[in-house]
Amino acid sequence: MAPRDDAESRADLYWRLVEDLTVDPAVARSTMMGFPCLRVDGRFFASLDRSTHHLIVKLPVGRVGALVASGQGLPFAPNGRVFREWVAVPVADPDRWRALMAEAKQFAGA
Image (tube, rainbow, N blue to C red; front, top):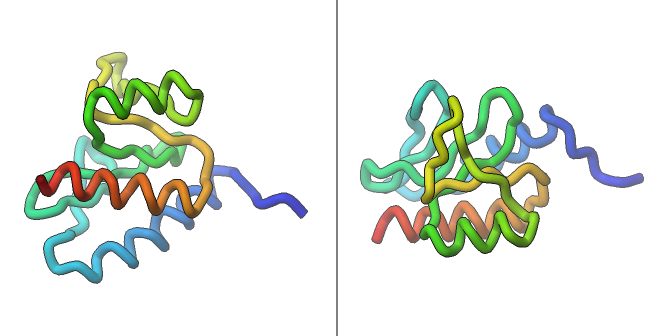
C-alpha cells in the first residue's frame, strides 16, 4: 500500500518533526501570520500552511528557486505576495521534510 499524502498525514508528519526539533532549547513553537511555526533563537524557519498543510521553510533565495524549478517546491505566496526566501513543499516525504527543516533551521540560525 502506498503512503498517504493527504492534508491529515502532512499535518501529522509536521507535528512529529516539530517534536524532534523542539528538543533543542533554541527552537520554540510560535505563530507567523496565523500559521503554526518554529523559530530558532527568535527567527522563523519552518511552518505549516493551515489550508494546504504544505511544509513551509525559509531557505536562501537560490535554494528556493532550485526547489521550485525542480518541481519539489512551490512559491510561498500568501495573499498573492511571493516571499522570496520561503518555499512550500507539498509532498509529505519524511526524510525530505526532516532534511529541509534542518536546512532551514541552520539558515535562520546563521
